[in-house]
Image 1 (spheres, helix red, strand yellow):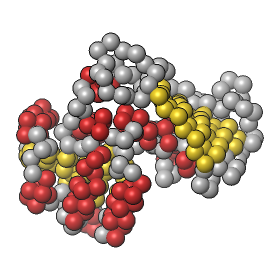
Image 2 (tube, helix red, strand yellow; image 1 turned 135 degrees about the vertical axis):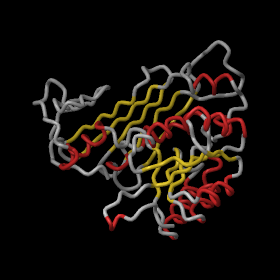
Image 3 (spheres, one colour; image 1 turned 120 degrees about the vertical axis):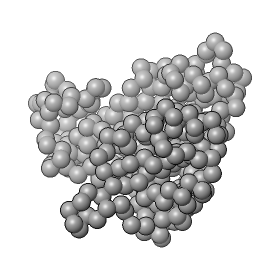
Length: 305
């Protein structure tokens, strides 16, 4: 499917974007799409008519649909954002690719490894592009980590740690806790299943081989009004590779903030951390007991790949 405009004559290419799934995550997608000068959100879709209509009205979107295939046929988007529950991702991704679309899919990409592999394979076979909505993957924190490793500041990675504190009283957590019919309860790993990518996508690129994984999850938070549905909200996982290990922590009792750590052969243990918020002014990225390392120009020094 050709993109709108013709880059060869100097005119900017405008991507026509359609979004399916008009729940809480959709608002974040719309906010980010509208920051792009070369993208236009042409339509939204949801199987619940009210959800599609209210989102379109609130954000001034011209077209809304309850039939996904009708939206694809009429709007002919270049890119489809899939912000539905992960149980539907495989089916929607295949239908969008068949319509010639590129994909941005909310995490988790699919329910399991087999479905994930199917989506990736199908996209590759049809020469389309795919990305997953990893919120923190392109943060200055993550990009700086790649720079420090690539430039040898940390040395060879030896151990990584990834923390995620989650607020069960927050706008998303509270809904899941109070509604036993929420789609998160249908996931095999429930709320941990839905957010685990936030922990893993910051560290797996630095692990090696096929790590042995030891994982433990349990329900650790007592809350008034919590429904009777089992909802594990604590996770500890240890990944042991050939030369690199990693530790993953998800907790509903930690301060809600994602915090990656890395320890390398050239730095003493716990010497390099990235607090939140990360300094965006280029000042420093290291703890006080390490010589401050100036933040390089990430647009030229390091690729976010």
